[in-house]
Image (cartoon, rainbow, N blue to C red; front, side, top):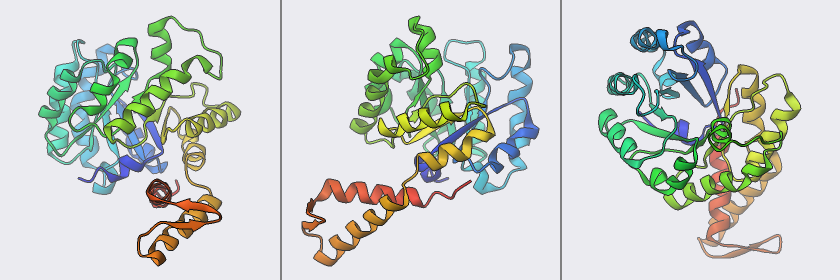
Amino acid sequence: MSALPLALARAFLFVPADRPERHARALATGAGGVIVDLEDAVAPERKMAAREALAASFAALPDMDRQRLLVRVNAAGTPWHDDDCAQAAALVARGLIAGVVLPKAERAADLSRLAQAIGPQGVLVPLIESAAGLAAVDELAAASQVLRLAFGNLDFQADLGMACDADEAELVPVRLALVLASRRAGLSAPIDGVTPDWRDAARLAADTARARRGGFGAKLCIHPDQVVPVHAALGPSADELAWARRVVDAIRASGGGVVSLDGRMVDAPVVRLAERLLALETQPAP
């Protein structure tokens, strides 16, 4: 199972694990990734039944859709974590999901155990949601099979007793830390947190624009209506794609040497940026 769709995905949509009738509908939104949630979205008394029903729900889906599926297990130290991880490992082994989202990630050892459970074909997305997770962000990013980091902005505020305004200016250093850790570990650009009021289109647009300015490549979504605007806002513009094609064409024409384009030297970092923009173009619009 290729991790490429999730590595380049821009919108990750949450869907409750105990609502199997919504799983296919979530995938049909065109979200690059769908996170089937066993944690916050499922009441304690329903977690076991939800977990046990996942295999049947996912088996009915086309293989290409399963490549976009992740399961968010309950956090390490909770009564459900071990059984969630065992079930996720079985789902990965059968090719029914691509990997696992670990909430409240704080210790690389937890990721290592999870990686061993799901095997090398599965990917991991740790959610940074606490001061301890931020302190360990480089170790988490470097852990085996981690594909991308994700930011749990609401839980992070709760952990630190913060009360941010809508612009979340107080969290700029935290977001930068995730972007830097991802770059140091060679990961895809991280996934930004949620916009809680799915009806507020202006807030979603502002949040997504901030994410892109800050180096994030994707965003968590809590409602299907958020998928299309998030995907569009985090993708390259027509002007950016045109520039990227000109860069790649100029380098090819030069035989790989350094060239000048529009009065600017085109060297290896510029070429990497152009190639990244063109790679993002391959993600189909929802």
